Amino acid sequence: MKLTKNTIFITGGTSGIGRGLAEAFHRLGNQVIIAGRRKALLDEIAAANPGMDTVVLDINDPVQIKAVADEVIARHPGLNVVINNAGIMPFDNPASGDLDDDQAVGLLNTNVLGPVRVSAAFVEHLKRQPEAWIINNSSVLAFLPLAATALYSATKAAIHSYTLSQRFALRDTSVGVLEIAPPWVDTDLIHKSGDPRAMPLDAFLSETLAKLEHATTEVLVDGVVPLRANVGPNEHALINQFNQSLVDNPIPVA
Image 1: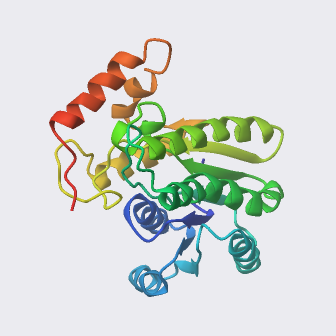
Image 2 (image 1 turned 60 degrees about the vertical axis):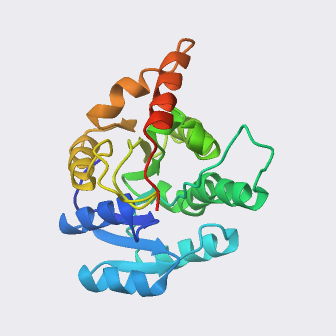
């Protein structure tokens, strides 16, 4: 996709990768609209990035998603890019009978139904644009699940699968569908720690934008490529090795 002269709507644009992408696209001269739940934080980001637009959105509210989409399209009729970035990453234990059902339902609503609903709210408008894109932010954990965040990993696998179907279904339209599958990036999705195993946000953004310009399906930083290729009947060895390494050297949490 071209990196300039777009009008871009980004969910989860107030922190981490979402904010990083929003500000990077803004610096390139695109019209950017970020969505998030906290108006004060949205206002702070808009003040730091003059010309960036904001809208309050609870990604778990399907009625509000439709209303926000209508509002954004009315304000920005040239909108041609939607980035589904909003997500949460709670820890869970698939070996325990102590299931936090409210947390599980909230995770599915945010990480799976959120992108599905946002896409549905914008897609008819996007079809009317000469060139448009839906970009879904999944994770390397879609291909290499982390047992300590088993349900989160499953939601990202679901987004990967949905993206494959969405891309095919839109094949004869002006709407392309891309998937960004980040590695562990040092943001506050879990706990920003400076852990050397995490990719610095600036490095991730730089490499992602460079690859995004020429992408037609997936956007993978170099470190993710061999992990993406691991999927198949012999995938278990690397999955077990990966998870054991994090048991032996846990991810730092607040």
